[in-house]
Length: 158
Image 1 (cartoon, rainbow, N blue to C red):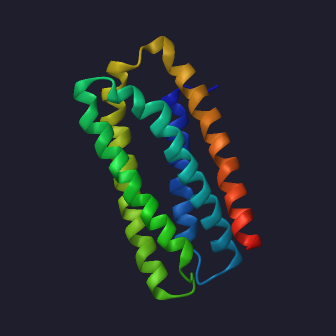
Image 2 (cartoon, rainbow, N blue to C red):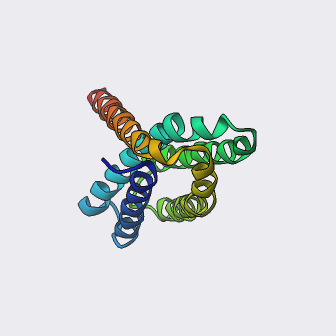
């Protein structure tokens, strides 16, 4: 089981590849739809698991509260963009414009997280616990993925 930093960075790298894949497609192609669905579901589950397992620990230290709150606020902004894009027609130019904003905001967020937040977290999470946090993160993410998939299926049936 990877430690928390490896798990988060691995997700971020996968998200960067999906962003590239989405941008390299056009219109409402099957490849774009597939990449978008993967990105949407993984980012939503990643964010929920990250807040519960990673940021909750940072908030336990006064100096970590601002970093954690800032990141959680960015999660909300990204989630809003994800939902807007999910409701829009991918074949329209407006979708691509909004996607580019999402990409910019998300890449800024994950770069900041890897460069700044991880170093602060290393001061809070003892070395002998980071693997346990990775395991809890992955378990929570898997649970959240199941919930998102269930919700998507229900909305498709309506």
